[in-house]
Image (cartoon, one colour):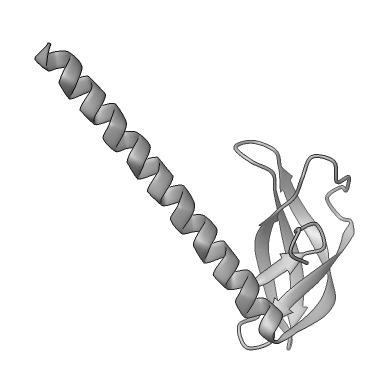
Length: 107
């Protein structure tokens, strides 16, 4: 009986940890989107990499004030594009590293 309680307790703690991590990451993402939307510019970037493993992510290269950035964003499965395609990038003018692409629902 004690072993079952220990296993249940460990699983419950693990699930709470995963939930906390997921909600914290989502809150940070929404804060970044809010920060970007306060003062932004939109430019063209180029898709440099695309991954559909463990979530859908794309990496985009874009240049702001002669500095090159390569950052990632998510996309939904219904959106079609290839590596090398041009993509709209909305970035924060005060922190150009913070960006979202046209494939983000908050664009």
